[in-house]
Length: 185
Image 1: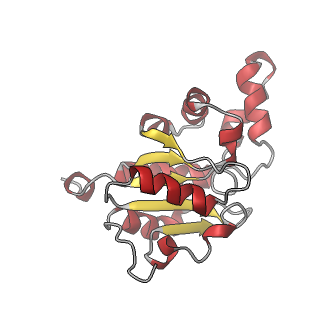
Image 2: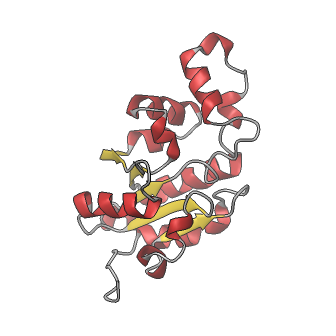
């Protein structure tokens, strides 16, 4: 029996840019175009949209911990749930598509920081399960000194590097440790 089978399923609050997609050579608008005009899509878009090392690390995280996934990405402005399902399945991240939370998105509305968007989502939907916020230093700048970072439940990827195997131990630990809001917040 795996440890993930004995502990509650956690929540993965997932950003895309600079976590999975480094926009080199393809980014969100290429993906949108490929979904809407499949005959014109670049032959390698689904292989190169997300960085291979990030895909491998996220696949392992999904296998090890089986979290429910909530998207926090700016891609929420462009795609609906079915588009995300399609993108994840085409990029070898079917486990992400298959584990989208019933309340699958935490959009940062105009003028709202990523930190506020996540706090609002957690206030409405978090039920005490372990959690991991996986973001980057650019779009997740408001998260730098967050309560989640202080509690070990947040990883901010380096811009232009993304998620990788070196971050897996901390990610797995966060998803296997109940989240308790620090008393000083």
